[in-house]
Image (cartoon, rainbow, N blue to C red; front, side, top):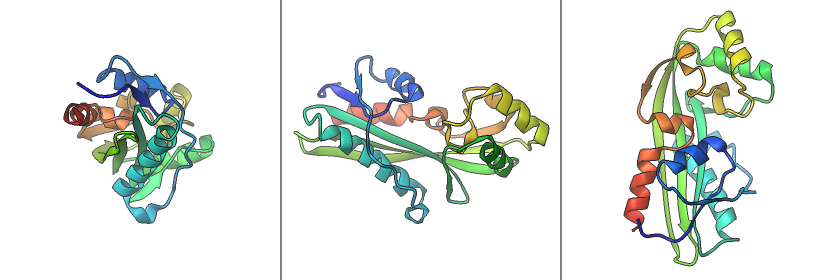
Length: 189
């Protein structure tokens, strides 16, 4: 792959691990962009806008680098479920997801300011939760730190306890659609 040096505009350890499956060498720079929470934009567009804001925030400081920004949200009936503020909100989110299918959407933006190039796309994965009893939720919350996870869950940690079916990219649910990102880098050329 021929491209400028890459910056991941995220300090998420999950995104860092996933991007390493695509690229062995990149730098991490935290984006200071403020995320939008406007559900009227729709799931794909909301995540794409946030990914673009994150990437552009870093690209302004590093115009000669290829910057990757990403934003992942869980959507139930087109309403975003972000990161819970406390365990009570996490319980509520998990109860709402119980026995239902929801979408996990990741918006991705690649931008190179000096080259005046950008690529914006999103990936959608459908996830069906098992029917969860209150005791199931409490056991999950006791095992997995969820306060920094959209939708109050991490499929890569004890996901078998809560998830029944994944249709689409599993890495997308974790935080970065590896297959789509690999393809975007290959096409960047």
